[in-house]
Length: 514
Image (cartoon, rainbow, N blue to C red; front, side, top):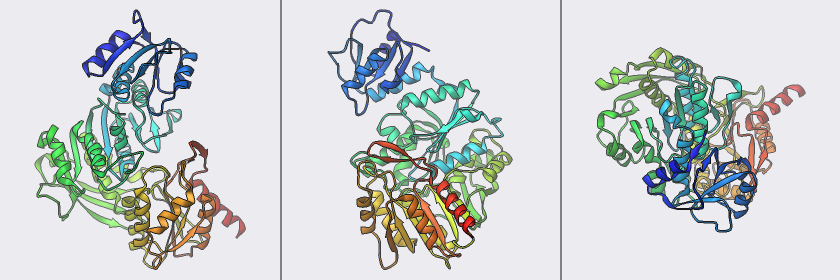
């Protein structure tokens, strides 16, 4: 692959992004584009983005770069300079062009929402397995799947990667025979223009609640909501959970760029909506226990009936809060051409790493590993467990990330006060903050008359103590990290066994000592 300077100039001018080109442009062609100076190769274009330091450009030149893309000119560099008004937007456009616009060869289903994106994405990926002959790629918070072989599946680093990585992975998926793609799109993806210029066949808006508000993320909730809504603006068909907060704003955003017949609404049967809208699909729980979860989906409009996906479905994971995620995935899969039988098979058998993973202990109850990482998801998870097992205690291991999502700390305190009996506050990606300071802040929002609080900054030891404190009827929830194999500490990804492995090893140790 290669991208000529003439094509770059034309593309950037079309989007009113080009300020100037410094240096000779005769016969210049770039054979790789990178934003990491360590990855640059001969005849490469280096993108100076984010927390850029001039020494990165020096390193890129040493590695063979012949040009750079930046928002300012570096006069001391001998490389060709392409100076733009917005490097993130420019990088997205050039990434799509360099990789040959792979999105045009994929049917793309994209999810956004404060909670449920990963579960919904996995549901949809599984429901399309049969109908696409396993030719569906997946870009999720947990895994990236670009092909059918094991080596074509790898751990993700961001919910939505940088634009160059998005298009690079799309190109790999297309080259590996993939015809469909299910992906999560975070609010930061729009805030940082990681998906600038990208259009989706189906865009799903699951829900919205305060999260990711802070100095390094969204300055206000209004900004957070606006970024979430951009998925609907950039989708041909929109699916909206009609029970979402701010429904009027969300629906009007979808209507601004989509005809009403291209907007599908769904809600739980009997739900009171924020505005009088006709839902296309309603669902009702037909089984909702720790062991069994099932829903009945009803088509309420003619166009919903035309999709032929109404019926009864069993879900592979518990939790009434997962029923809306399943409903969204059923509609999306139907729009992608899957049959009701194919969808049912996928929902019944899918395994989602780090989501409601349960482990039974002979003497210490049931341990759940779940990625719940904000108030909305923690409230739903703990509330469900408390309702299903009122006789047992709910014991929670939880921390909160540093230098982002500061509002989560109050949310965790509130969720613990509502449904937990005890909590072990610990470390979870503290970044450049002191994990105990974060834990103390969570504690400041806890109702101590209802919840017994323990502090243990060694996360593994916190899990050990929580499980040891549980009785046979209790439930231990290890929340926040799921199968994340790292702790982010002072700018370094420190290897971590994952919560799932820690729990398995603890329980194995109990058995060996019995």
